Image (cartoon, rainbow, N blue to C red; front, top):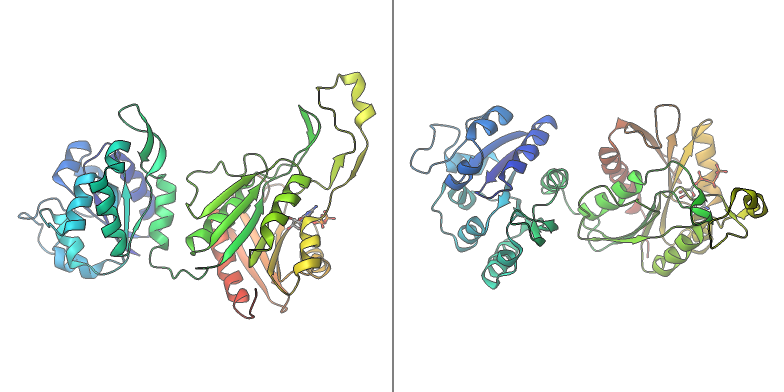
Amino acid sequence: MRIIVGVSGGIAAYKSAIVVSSMVQRGHQVQILMTEGATRFIQPLTFEALSGRPVGVSVTDQPAGPISHVKLGKWADVLAVVPATVGIMSRLALGEPTDLLSLTYMSYRGPVVIAPAMEPKMWLHPRTQEHVAKLAADEAQIVGPVEGHVASGDEGMGRLADPEFLVRAIEHAPIPKALSGIHVLVTGGATWEHFDPVRAITNPSTGRMGFEMAQEAAFLGARVTYIHGPRGADFGTLHPSVTSIPIVSAKEMRDAVWNIAESASIVVAAAAVSDFRPISPAKQKLHKSEITAHWDVTANPDILAELGQEYGGRKFLVGFAAETDNVVASAQSKLAAKHLDAIVANPVGANLGFGHWEHRAQVIDRFGGNATINEESKEISARKIWERLVDLFYREPYV
Ligand code: CTP
């Protein structure tokens, strides 16, 4: 992709270097335009080295050729402003092209991503909000700011969204919102079945896959409810269309799922639900000598199988199956037994799956298809899994 990254003059300007570096590593061509103010926070040389291209700063002194704002407007697939200060947002919203970046913005027609970062009071000022509304009306995607610590030492809404999240938002800007208007329910992470407040049956699932499936669905335009075990959402900026519901045990997950499922059209069960739970958990910490008295366990409900009973054929149901052997055959039998539309089979071995970054998956569907997604980051795997799921979902009308 060909991306213009506009950098305006705020403390968060240094973070745009991380965004640019990551975009270049992901194979994109990046052209940087800086405002004069931005050059006081970070040197153009940094961006030249990262992007391998001359940086555009001044309107009157545009380097010949590639950085003419008119040519650039035609060249780019996406224009992103990272970070966007109150000043640049005002100039873009009001059409005051007094710098190379806003001049280029006006010569360009295509997806725009704006990532504001400023003091919370400035963000909440009515003028800023008017400009944000104008930019949004022009179909710019406003990404952030997010809640947190800002440079003045205050806490509030004003922090730049995580660079990783911005990279994803920029890459998604030209991709059609295939799940727009769809409510997607995703489960993720391990459940914890406590014997007492400090001991539990659980498993090494980090929750990353469910998190990425939830995020990706949101980037595709869905409204997402993400029900997850402890720490299953601790992976950076959460997409604003994702509602995160933390639970601890399988029973809590089941209750939360049934509260939501009726309104969802797609359910993706990526949670690693503990198969068993202690029959009589203790409210206080047990002493070693007392533990064996609480040792007995009972089977947990199979949340996805129950959903399959009720909604199989009516809602689009997707399971995940981590398997160490007979991967495809085991996944196929779970697909049939739980009345699913598709199941994502993951081989789990010494270096794959649970807690490991590499990820390999096969999306097996009830139409007899089997698509392999090779070792990628979980983020990219989630994107490819969704590409396949979207295709399957639209084959038949679901509620
Ligand atoms: N699942 C669930 N509730 C459970 C167990 C599993 O919703 N109590 C879901 C998982 O989220 C996953 C799918 O069912 O989408 C398959 O999970 P897995 O543990 O592989 O399947 P099991 O049916 O428990 O089979 P196994 O005997 O291999 O553990």
